[in-house]
Length: 91
Image 1 (cartoon, rainbow, N blue to C red):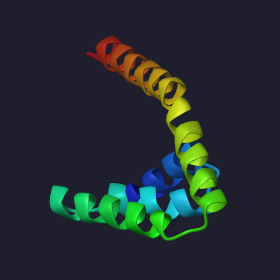
Image 2: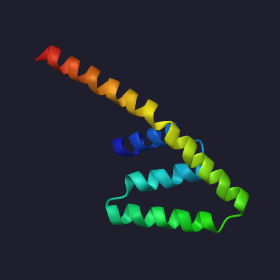
Image 3: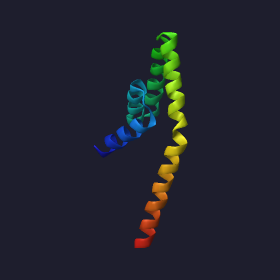
């Protein structure tokens, strides 16, 4: 269950879009690259069937999500450094 909790927490921080939250949760929980590729292709086929305004909203939400990545990477980096320092101090 810990993996599910971590994915859920990450995805909810990554995007505010309910559609993209579902997509990224499934994507991150996929067990193979083929499954991830299939999910990605299916997302864009389904987005292509939406009205133009809805397509634009999904694409904007996707861009906004990826804009959040650098801050999330910095946070993860800081956590790894802190954990490494704690481990080194106890060695």
